[in-house]
Length: 72
Image (cartoon, rainbow, N blue to C red):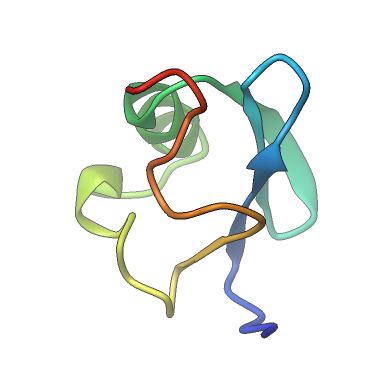
């Protein structure tokens, strides 16, 4: 299901990372929640750790939210 959230965290890549995109701009490849938080902080999102589970802000694609393929 597509939510059109402004931030999309894509499915796991072959390396276990997940591409993070905000409003169509690639912010980076995250390997854990802390990476996502740092990318969003650099993009100017206030309190990014508070929006990771808010579907109005973040759409997690492919696998479950916060799943990084290595148990983190």
